[in-house]
Length: 84
Image (cartoon, rainbow, N blue to C red):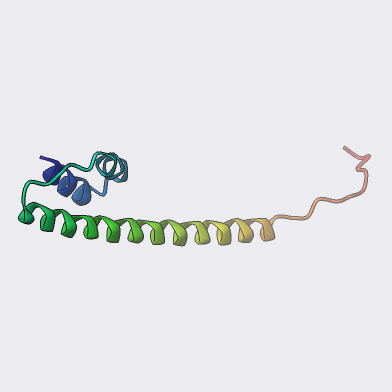
């Protein structure tokens, strides 16, 4: 059951479910289950690193966009505008 839920969470890229499953790690009954869990945990780790890298790239792009938008805005005058 736990292995199936872990597999589904990886396929769906559900980080919240992965976190919940890692908090409730069961005791495995045999070597086959342990090997499958080991494989799935490596896949989950790979997924988390990939998502982390994608988030980092998105944040860098957002910072570049903000910097560009700020550079295209006209600078406010520091003088007192008495015409308005």
